[in-house]
Length: 117
Image (cartoon, rainbow, N blue to C red; front, top):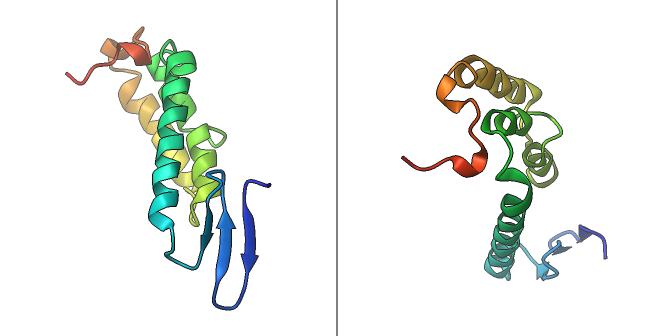
């Protein structure tokens, strides 16, 4: 099965995503698919946070996050009907350079060291 399988009719459609749940019509089983997707996302984030991101320097993480080939930007492009514009991505990247990098308290901190306080 491909990542997206779409069969279009005039009034109905069938959509199977990576959740493996067949959705027919506009609203049928939508909640089930959304819940399954949220569980997959949470699982992915937990695994990724524990391996890659925690030890990454915070500033490097932010700079990588706001690039055209980051996981977040690619995800927005693949899933959303209106992906983030290049201007928006570049603007946020420049804001990191202008406002975060000069703030010396962030230098040397990893993503895993961040707290809510």
